[in-house]
Structure formats: structure tokens, C-alpha cells
Image 1: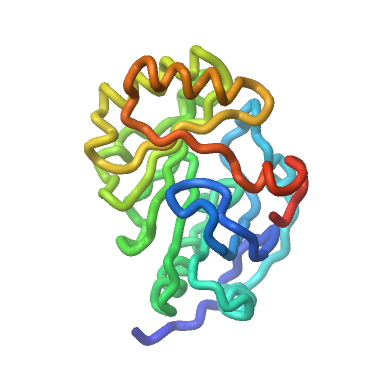
Image 2 (image 1 turned 120 degrees about the vertical axis):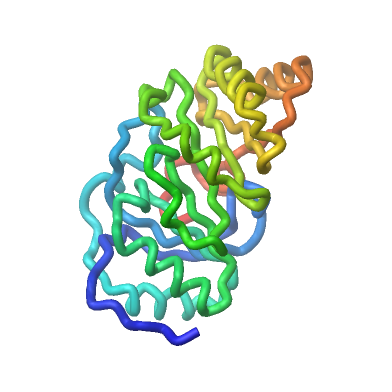
Length: 220
């Protein structure tokens, strides 16, 4: 595929290599392209520092930095990447270079424009996030088997809401379902016990990077 250079720019917080801390790709080396800005304000957000700032960079510049790491797996994250019009051509060009591309998105933006080769990780917002009303439920119909839906849980109420959403929308029949915990707000052991008691068809996960490094450390 021929690549068309883009003169338009993205607002980029950082590009770095680490291990993938979440999803079914957890534990693998991964390059993260973190874009600035978000249309949501979740109560437990662990990346509020991405709401503003960042450097305006061309897609070519970002691709060059990604290539320098020599790692196949790339995640485009934020903030909310889909507030950037140029996030779509960025992902297209990453795919054209043979990368496995993950998109971490809040679920509040339409995923229809996302290139079909991208693995979408859709982060649906439970009540305690303060953004439950922002969920764009029409996105569920656009999910494919290789995509993943994530619920970050901060309470028993969140858990019950997520459990019921999985059943109502038959999410486990569409794609992988992930249950995660808002760090420090709910016991992982409690969430696991609830999942086992209710036979929830979901994968429990912990943010691996917050175990390996201090929870607030950036660039990991």
C-alpha cells in the first residue's frame, strides 16, 4: 500500500515503549501513542494530565518515532483518540506498515470510521465514572470478534450495572469482555468473587503496569 504523507498534525502527549498492561494483549511489548484531549471527565481518571498540552506533530513524525522502537504492537490511546480527526489516518498508516494496532476509546465516540484492521478496545462507562450518559450504545453493533469491551469498576453498583449490560447486549457473543477495577476504589478479590458467583462471561484483568511500576508513574 502506498502511503500518502499528511501535512495535518496531531496533538501528542507522548510516544513510548513499555509492556501492554491490559486487554488480551497484556504482557506484550507495545508502543503507546498517547494523544491529548478528552471529551469526558471520569471521576477516577488516571490520566487527567492528558486533557491539555501536548506537542503538535505530523503523522510522519509520529510514525518515525514508532518505527525506531522496532516493536510490532502499537496502541493509540489518550485522553480520547477519536477527538482527533487525524487519528484515523494515523491508524491507517500504522496498519499499512504491518503493525498490529489497538485503539483504546471511551465508547462515547462513533467507531464506524475506525479502519477494519484495528483492534478496538471499547471502554464503556459505569455509573460511578460520572459519565454513564456518554456511552454511545450504537457502537455495540459495530464490534467484531477481535474487538474488546472493557468495564472499569469502582463499586458493587458498577459491577451489577456491567454484569447486566453484558447480559442485555449479549456482549460475550460479540467479542471479549474485560472487567477491571478502578485502582484503589474496589477490592479486586471482591470483584472476582462477584464474577464467579454470577458466572459472568468476562475476563478479569488488573492493570499490569501499575503492579510493575508505581501506579502514578508516567511513560509506562
